[in-house]
Image: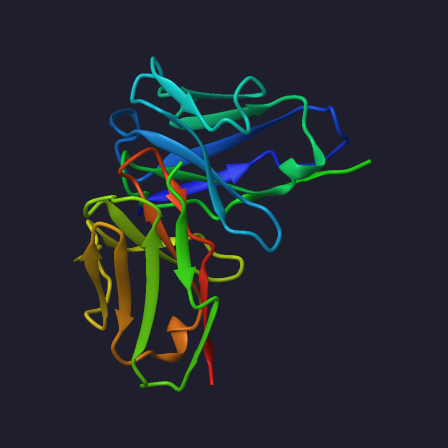
Length: 116
Length: 106
């Protein structure tokens, strides 16, 4: 069974940092491009970042460029999102997903709340 | 950035009544469009890619059409489990999503 499980979310103060993890199983993780997408409360889905199969190529949305870093460990079948200088507007459920164009499958998400 | 606009924001239909959801792109995305279903507490689920190709395991009552800037997701006879929020996504130029259409039971 293909599975993606995010972890690492929680409550953090503005300006703080958090690292999300996405544990993958049931498919060839090392052959897959991976994505991060978020959904703020009551809002739509927003693409954040992507990484190629070996981690040599990464891209970011302007809203997180310079603050967030995507990475992967193919030996551990795990995707990461390091989030620094967090702001209140970063409060959202964060999803990892598989794919280069359309995204399939997705994880269930990890809630990040940025508040003092 | 390509802006995706979905309409209506909320669609109320009776079970078994055809549901038609629309998605418009601010510029042409060719057929590089996907549709997703989102239920509370669940992962988004891919329904359609390439504007009209059903993903694995998606029932035939879901169909997608359109190209360029105008797209439609049709649910021919919605079942109780289909009442959810639906998002379109373009992947022609990076990735952007619509704001979603909530399909609710009338």
